[in-house]
Length: 201
Image 1 (cartoon, rainbow, N blue to C red):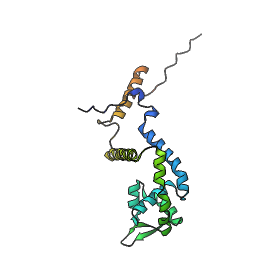
Image 2 (image 1 turned 30 degrees about the horizontal axis):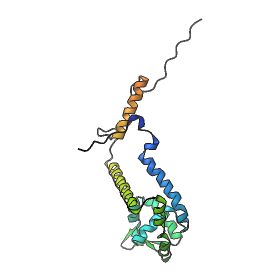
Image 3 (image 1 turned 60 degrees about the vertical axis):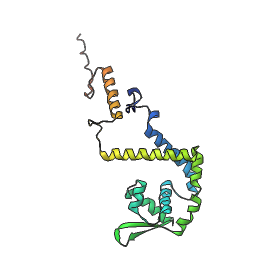
């Protein structure tokens, strides 16, 4: 019988070194440091590189389709595509069947830099210190984590609802423990102690 999920101990609930989110966040910065010299050779930033990878996979996509795959809003993606167009790598045009849609196509120059870009995944694998099977397994686990977080976000659960998760419960326990030590009630307004009246002479 599987063990139920356990909440972290209150004393450890706010230790940065145990935050999964911080591990992912700091790993992202480490990735950027590895990618930068590689992408400088292509004259691309990381967001521009991701957009180009999607277009190398499948040319002639809408801005909306690219944004959905990159988890970016159109307002964030559009400046990236404008810069790629200024560099001569893509061409943006209105869809003749639906003028509300903007389609993005690779230029000859955009297709040409793909040859250089093919070397990048191998460099990232080497930098990771993982073999290919370990890397694919880790990537799969991170995608599953992302999907779980997206489902949680879409459910719009309140941290104050009856079905609070273990982290919210642990934070509440920390607050109660602190309140007990102080001899106060959790959530009660903090008041300054009354000063004793000065002795009359």
